[in-house]
Amino acid sequence: MTDFLSGLSSMPWLQALVFVGAAVVAAVVVTALTAFIIRRISRRKEWAKCLIRRARVPFRLFLLVIALWIALQATNVDPWWREFLSHAALIATIAAGAWLFCALAIFVEDLGLARYRTDIPDNRHARRLRTQVLIIRRVTVVAAVLVGLGAILLTFPGVSAAGASLLASAGLISIVAGLAAQSTLANVFAGMQLAFSDAIRVDDVVIVETEWGRIEEITLTYVVVHLWDDRRMVLPSTYFTTTPFQNWTRKNSELMGSVDFDLDWRVDPDGMRAELHRVMELTDLWDHRVAILQVTDAVGGFVHIRILVTAVDAPTLFDLRCYVREQLVRWIQQVSPLSVPRTRVEHSETPLETAVPRTRAVPVDTQPDALFSGDASAALRGSQFTGPVEVPRAPGADRAGADRRDPDRAGADRRDPDREGPR
Image (cartoon, rainbow, N blue to C red; front, side):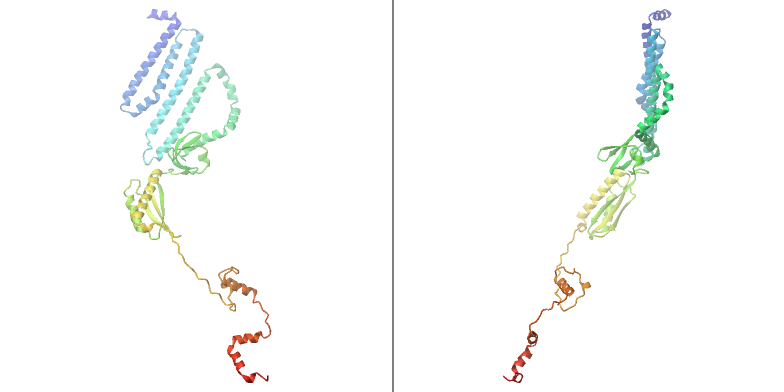
């Protein structure tokens, strides 16, 4: 064995290949042994399955590059090549270590999320924790990547020598970067605020820009809202810190909704209320909290009936309102057709008013029509306003007029010879 090692020392590249092969075998053996132990544990524990899924590949790569780095350090190859290969192995080790750290961090966060389920009715606390863990996961991954890149850069002598000057100018650079990325930094801080202020959580039901949807994803810079028709609305994080919005699941997911009807005056509210309670007992959409029917208005020829119902969440409430509306429409058509709203039109004919004699004085303030509207009463009021018009009469017109008014007197004058006088 000693002769073999002494022979390898005289052939440095062959020695390097042997050491690299031994390192690979050692890494494979260690990873196989570790995998065997974790698989045995995974038969009884769920966390072991999650660990295998998350960290299997980065763990194997990390052990392999460490073994290769150690093997290269023990070889007798040319110093320049050994330094170059060792430097490359060091960079690979740092990168693999950062990857393994991210995988382990995600594994730990998955363990926390597995304890809180979001597929149960009362999942407010679980959704809040999920939102915070997802934000922490992203921050952790970004921090690990940045630290890994910094560590890789520091392995180069030129970069490490320039580190002092870079740190000296860090104040000016930070000011310039802050001004240049003001909106981005605002979104980042807004995302952190949303994650830990509990304003919105993943799977919250919100109304944004008059659109109904659920919070699908919260990142450091934007929020994705899954709308009811499968569209996605992407909003900056600052939107939820500067703009009012509706959160229907802020404290709990239970909601109350209304179903409105405009019906005829012959509707039977008691019968309709009994039908409401009957159909509510036949569905699982109702949470048995509120189911009432009230006549809230009765004007304009219609009776306005409002029904209030409750459900465990917004989608269930929408389905429940549609169900109640359909059942009561069927009840109105089949049982109470007189409740169907109707529009009534009344026809009436008013005779024209009899013209008033011109000698009769009619107070103007008692006339409902306008002064000069064109009808008979308006003409009368117009004549009273302007006054009677005097017409000149011919001589003897008074006597003729008197004769016309008293014909008996005119005949008596013609029959009395004594009143005629001498001829």
